[in-house]
Length: 387
Image (cartoon, rainbow, N blue to C red; front, side):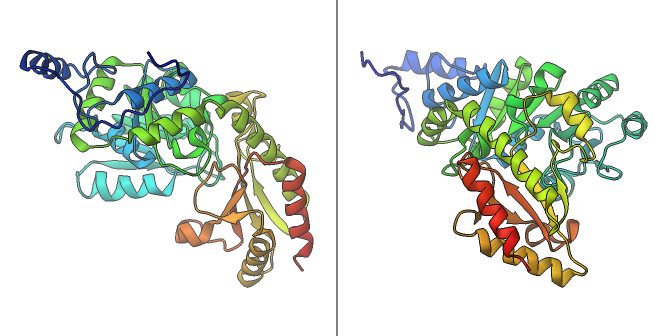
């Protein structure tokens, strides 16, 4: 017995099965697609270190199962693929204000390669209309409805519990990307979602040094289908990354609480600046979905992301202010196209998403969990330096 309080890293590609009888027993049991098998066979199927990390996420999300993959996009692929059975698939409905990678996946993989009938539900004035949503879902009768708890990058918060209730009324399955909200703010499964997805690269890891995805749920049949698809498609995270993720999850609540606080402080400073024309942050009373965010998250926080747009009389002026700000903060706030890192980072929105968000002055900022006073000082100084 090894008296360690930490899980070991099982780097085995395949596991020893001793004899033919044991091998036969292991492979017969494998067809049942249990979350934690009695006998491990091959790390593409299941791995003890990965299962241990999954149990930590189950604890956070309040789910009966969780399955880790090597990225958020691979988790999305697993979640969607298990509901596709040949061409016997009804329409799938996506809320339009979601991560660009998900939109591209829906268009280029689900529609173009797999022939699915994909539809979008578009907000009006940065807000989703529930009455219009029910009219659309009543007409389409979709099999899948896909939403983000906080949208990327415009930070729109739908009345998610009402959305789930309406979708269930018409027989749809609900998939929620909860990456931006995390289970610290909301647990979608409690509200009736069928699958919850995270890019675990972001807040679950929180250190910018691994990529991972996870899908969680309570339905056993969905779990078995997901385990089988993950196995066949090879969407398995490595034991080393699962080990590091397991250790990083231990500090998740502490980290994310501070990131929410830092983001709220940054949003207030940006909102007061004459150099900034608009700030998107659900915690601000002027945000289009502040009421929805309060209803969904209560007083726990509003996430660690802030999107803002520089003021200017024309595109050139807005672009110049954006570039000067990025340069002014570059010693402390790096331009890195991800989020959830320990230190605050930013990303110019137009440079990444182009035509969909064409405003050249727009920046998406991911608040870190560094010292608040130092962070605010950096931003205030940078704003003052912009002529």
